[in-house]
Length: 477
Ligand SMILES: [Zn+2]
Image (cartoon, rainbow, N blue to C red; front, top):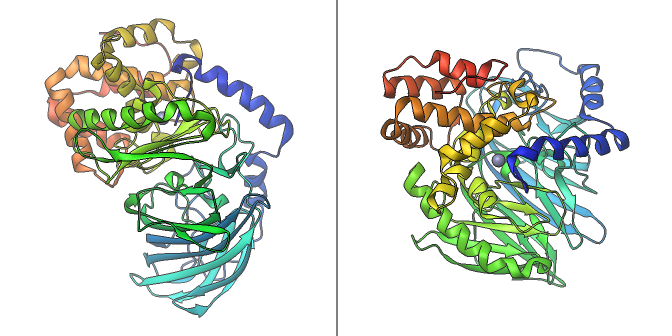
């Protein structure tokens, strides 16, 4: 995720959002406390899939007992009524014997659930949908959920703003970090369980529905409707899935390096279409040289009219919520295609592996295009960083302040200091090996540190300790 402004003012932007949000809507904290107080329906704890995937900071995000391979979402959205309806078919494999398991789903009315084609009993409790079925360990299964309703975005957790399924003037803007996939489909809603996706989305004629990956066939015209089929065949974290829809001007083609490009802008941002299209292609090509081969089958971007005030690294098509992005933001979101999307974190506390790298990428892009060097950007960030950043160790992102400026800026500074310590050759070889070894997988900070130490032959405990894990302003090399 990135903001439209420079990292130095990230914290201030979020403070404003937090005040508005706290004043007008219930917080996630309330949801959590009601969840933790809820009566358990577990009859045999050995065979009930856990209600969370095991991230201590987000105890009810994701679920235990199974691993999803594929989501097939067949959905219709009527923006005028804000009504979403359809079916999600989740193909998964058990990781334990199960008598019941959960999916995450916020609101909406579930009309039917089947497991391998057989009707299954289910219950709802807060954002947990519990499905009762007898399944042995290591067994592939398919759960289909038919549902409908008026989706609502998540509002209210401090500094996260509004995310998930958010109505725009002419449709919907879907940007779901960290756990807003559940606002529009039943999901194992945590980046630790990645899956491939097919999206078949029907919207009123004249609108365009945009999801991840590539279009499968041409849009199909119906009676006053049009249906788009998108496929993302590479593993994707649930928060990166989208179905942003509305009136869009679209430009397609390929980058100079041959990667297919799909750029779309709300008509309000017509003037930005050519720039979004060409920069997205050029930057994706450049990062492919610096970070290693592009992990996906297409690139691009979406500028919508919804004034989110942030951008999200939506897989294959970053989304810019209500603003014309500058080069730094586009470079940031496209760097995330490697750091966050191809390599996804296992736990949210490791978020600097996404945001620190994407921030450092902004500095690298500036240097590449003849602006400030990365060293100058580091010096500027170092000398202007606030006490709030020095007091927040970015290697341990905090649940209630996940997108703190430290996770971005100090995370980027940590990488620059690593580069200064191990030298350019080793640093850039490390980055390429990191993206190669963990392509499409999940990663931890410990794994990155171990690889950096192995490739440099240096003990980097002190360096990472002072830049990632300790409070205070480190002295610089
Ligand atoms: Zn970001």
